[in-house]
Length: 226
Image (cartoon, rainbow, N blue to C red; front, side, top):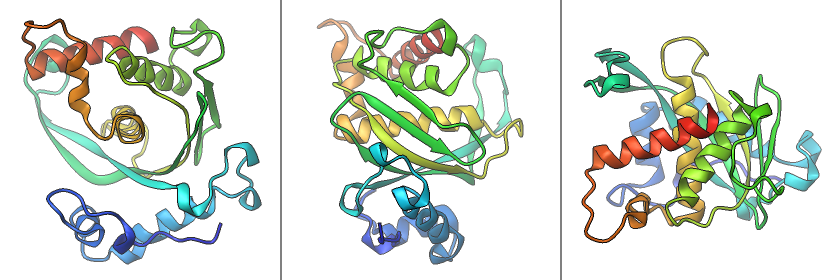
């Protein structure tokens, strides 16, 4: 594939801001520097010529770009485990992904420095947890897919080429960053970006606060990925 990432080509979002404006907010005033080179590398890396598995490779017209930031907790770290309050802030270190949707239930993720991950949501095990996957990226992918499906979203697979500059164990929420990235991918590809669909599964007349819904989603994911 010959297409390279261009911030000006990204669709307008966030109140009509251009891709160039959004990339400047995320990465500073040089969006065509390191920012563009990272997306270029990921997009070009999704071709069979670059060693990406042919079954999961994607054409230029079918790819989408995603970014999820790392996070630092300024105070209240870990108190959220007991419903405490945390003051957090995102950082400019992030995970970038070039993604292509699929018509089947296969999810293939390649991330620099890690083993490739393949999950088949149609493998007969469905969205139920698999004990051998406990604590792995495969379990995380299956768990987030299950969280969406439980709330009425018809999820399918995707191919993704990912790069993160958030170091593991750095205290910048690298695992949470990946969870947000995957959830954003599912939401964009198969839920039209309407995360409010999470609320559609609750019984009529039953009120749920945003915090309550977030707690429910987090609990569902934790139960599935261990």
